[in-house]
Length: 84
Image (tube, rainbow, N blue to C red; front, side, top):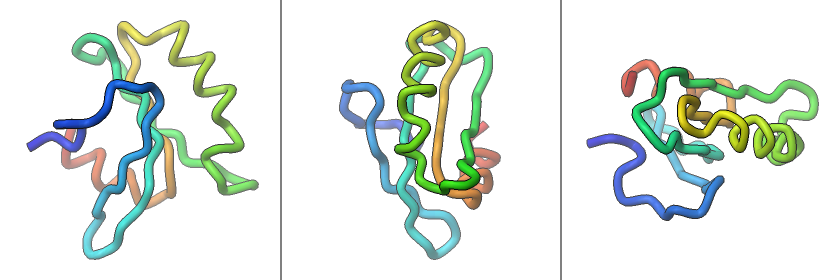
């Protein structure tokens, strides 16, 4: 089962993801087609993904047919590696 299955269509949306035994929140900008690229946005300082929302909104708007963006804590890369 994909981590995107059954999610709302409002972009971006927040999704709680389980990595190992811990829950993390991710901000997801799904691709409108099969993604050619997947970008994992791991925020630095400040570590809040919402700080980068305007940048991610613009990036997704310009590339939504080929780019999927997943933003969140650094541990999310473990989940992304399993999905892709």
